Length: 257
Ligand SMILES: [Zn+2]
Ligand SMILES: [Zn+2]
Image (cartoon, rainbow, N blue to C red; front, side):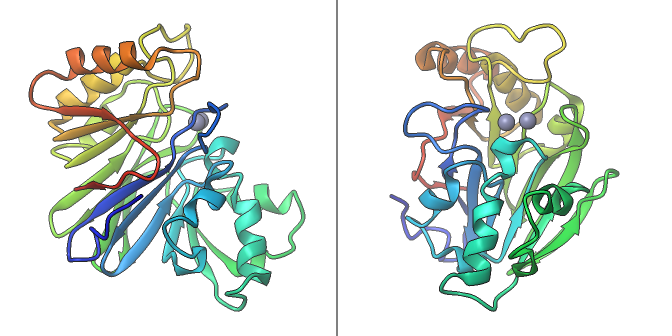
């Protein structure tokens, strides 16, 4: 379970769901709770994450949700969150949701009941900065994956957590993750190979991204169940070099930025 860290003036990230497009038993899909004294923000909300999130806070106490892209493993639990926010114990509050253009319509395709409990704001394809309140700033850039996909960086008083979303290796993520305290990076294909034309990474790609960015710590995530986790970790460490602390993102285990 998470510590009380992040509420004492610092910034921390709690992996809530670390699964890939299909997850291992026990894994929820993409969701990272980033919090500090004045803000509690979920990056993504994949399948199973709303349930697991409640180990850490009441969902109505989120100050924002930011969605990286429209693949279901990164946003599908917003369908449940809207019901919770509209008719659950916090009915009447409205939760800000930042995401790609089309996010609201995608949810409304399943019926627009409860959508009044979420207020939608679009991330701009050109990238940008957003003041999320509580001293927390969101910076974002598009990365090569489903069009558009946004890599996300949250900063508080010089501390930073960068989330690469899903993507193939690219310079935009390296730039966004420059000198990050924590880089959360996908490694869908573990120690294997990415099939031709597939916009995802191996663990070595993730390690190389962290090394190029000068990130202090790399949290590997979003790995298909078939790949050996120990081999992937070793491959990421070889690629990252000595300057980067590399570990798996572990559900419920908070990491300080
Ligand atoms: Zn994904
Ligand atoms: Zn994706």
